[in-house]
Length: 151
Image 1 (cartoon, rainbow, N blue to C red):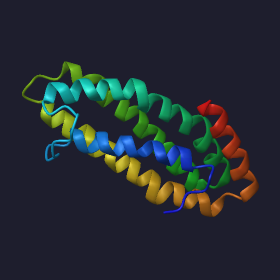
Image 2: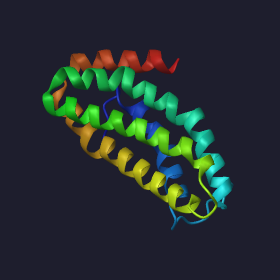
Image 3: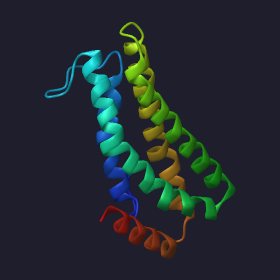
Image 4: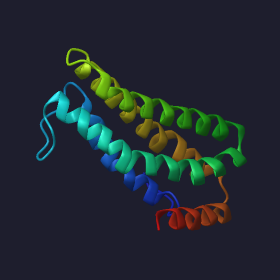
């Protein structure tokens, strides 16, 4: 899927999110240099939230979602749902350290599945609709906002 230049940097950030999502799932293969134990995956997820997900969520919420809500009712609904999933993912990850050894693998799997589903929805549905419905001049403004946010 070809991304408009305004969405390309946001989309590129999704790669590490998908890798993390797979890592957390129960049937994940071993990835070179990545944790393999539930405790290691938990610690990785908590660090990933702070280092990558929260800044990424902020970028989307302060640029892409604001624009989407101005374009159509459908995009507003999608942005609202995706933002609600951001909060849900944060909560799931923040509660991982409290999970007992017995339920930790299940909680990791749940978090990984939601993260993967969330990213795929953004990429396959939300970004596609956004690119179709938003006029080019507004996408150019978005591109500047994304750049400013990243620097």
